[in-house]
Image 1 (cartoon, helix red, strand yellow):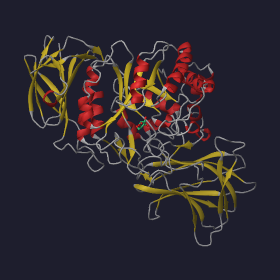
Image 2 (tube, rainbow, N blue to C red; image 1 turned 135 degrees about the vertical axis):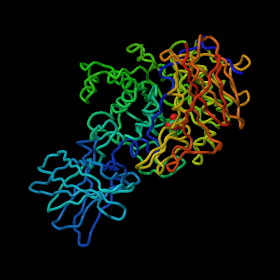
Image 3 (cartoon, rainbow, N blue to C red; image 1 turned 90 degrees about the horizontal axis):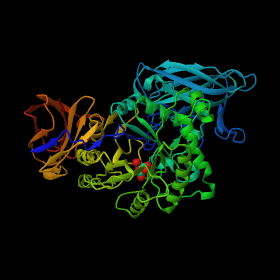
Image 4 (cartoon, protein in one colour; image 1 turned 30 degrees about the vertical axis):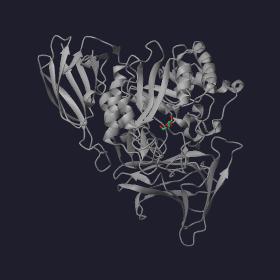
Length: 635
Ligand code: AHR
């Protein structure tokens, strides 16, 4: 018999408690949520024609050459010059990101920046084709004049095809220059032109996340400092956003992505907008003057750190400043005069050593002087039990000459670790910095092994751990699973929360666990006890309880990791009355290795039934390997 003390509030659950970690890894942004279908649209990849092929029908004499204008346009260095002859069968094909996902009956919007050579009049026939070469959608555009200008044309696709390609056939005699050759579906999240994949954002919105951490992850740091994420280069017109190599390009254990670059079509403005759309607090993480220490670990000398700190100050102005300010005006010019109301800022991702500490202090000083209300998040490097982690954690916790608001801890660990660490925060200093569990996921084989799977065992173990986060909500103020997205044909890291291909997406069992916690958050933690102790693994069970003061409900989360049916009773003290009926939402599988998949996306998914409540007792029959969330009205 378990006891719940519904009137003994232990902590407030922060609205930010369960959130999202976004990084452009596994083709999460380019090739993923950013709905652009053309790969290397501006010929800026290291190999300028990567993703493109020339087409030459018999007798074709046309040709194309990539031109470099770096001296006059360093952010968008290249364009392609195409020479066309009448009746010529010369053209260009773009392969998309592992093909282009096209849906029958949907509208597609083609656009291109173009200019003709003097007196020339080259038109462009644009075609979507399936792998057999059948045209499944077509349109034409006719650029005019010698000035760069954008041209647009829309058409409807006649077939659904996950592996379409885009052909561009110049028609007529002459030379035409092309840049930013782009194709987007009309249907995007909130129908924004050139926006985000609606199905992918919907999965995020459905979780009702408390925050969105962006843009990473290691891409914040870059392999070298030149390749770090620089937010200022990701705003404004897309053609002016300077492309860089993605830190996850071929680097890692699953070498499928030599074509992984960051176009920054999903840039900082879009990240803030996405946060707002899904009701999440924006939580940007910025480079702190250190490149990824798993790579070069390149450092900016302390006397040259100012531009990095200035980027942080300017970011706050961009997000929150009035339209009269330099950076606030840029936000307004992009269509958002209202501030984004940013409250958190992360300084560095997974850095370590005294080099981090001294750089953090410099950031802290400048940020506190100007923006004392912005909560600062510090990294602890990888991972618990490691030397770097312990050094940073101890140093940050005892720091007297700089404020440390929230510490970001990452754990990529075996499922057992998650169950064994449900008590991790029980003895943390209540007066010290708060905790952001900023990246975590059960590694079923080894950290980031390509063989890791999104199994029910992993997900259930995370749920057990999360009851510990919730029980300690006075210390833990944010938590996010990582990584978020993975493209089935272009990933570098497993496991991941949501898998996608060019047309489909599904949530893993881990997604279902995150969602069930986030959508059943409650407002205040109350004790749930077994023999007067917190439920942290006795009989294989883990539990936490909250009440929701807005809806006047008791919310019980109980994880049964054992292989037994457990008929249990929860005696609820401290309430006048409980409704006779409550609901229990259950996630479970008999098979600990169960995964979800494109073919079976709901193998592990919630089912709901009623629970009986009698004399302030909740009767709950917990099936083996189950996560149970009970909601009962109180009075
Ligand atoms: O989530 C994948 C990577 O794991 C992140 O980029 C990094 O922060 C961590 O090491």
